[in-house]
Amino acid sequence: MVTLCSVSDDSSDTQLLARARQGDHDAFRQIVVRYEPVVAATVIGMLGRGDDADDVGQETFVRFHRALEAFRGESALKTYLVRIAMNLSLNALKQRSRHRWRFRSRDQEDDIPEAVAPALAVDAGEALEQREVVRNAVARLGEKHRAVVTLRLLQGLSVRETAVALGVPEGTVLSRLARATEQLRTALRPYARDGVNPEIR
Image (tube, rainbow, N blue to C red; front, top):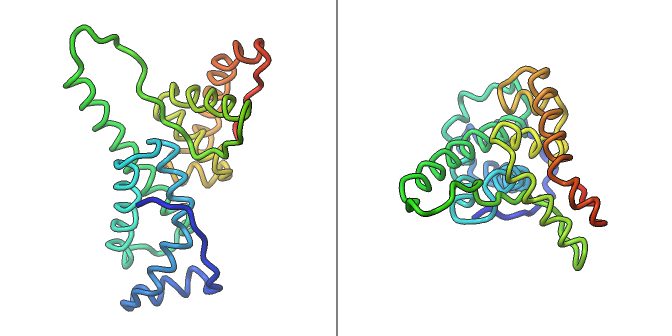
């Protein structure tokens, strides 16, 4: 199950990877605990909370375990795991979309995909309403734009880290981010007029 937690172990990623490659299960467990929050944030940002998000979170670390010997540190471990999580999330979204299309009755409206709520901090009262507004706006973004928003704005990855995680040039990240930001600004404009000023945090 995808959970958010932390680890106090002071071993470096390089040390943990070396031990994990030698079959040290505790070292691999520490890697999982250390990077579970960023994997969870990526998966929940793309899929929302649910069983499929849990499955993708678990599968991310299964895939990584299988690739331990192949991982040579060309990118940071965090970026590498985010890329696995993002690719699996995009695959899950495609499967979800095909499933919806296959079983949707003819009299249903061709509506937008279900809300994909990013992992945002939620306060009570008006703040909760604002976060819901933002969640729904992010949900209406296309997959590529939603991915950039999830990594760059919600998780705070750098442009370079986002580019590596998505396997695209940095210029593509910037252009998609600009487009996504404009779409969000347009979507949130009516709420701003009503006195709601939601922010992505």
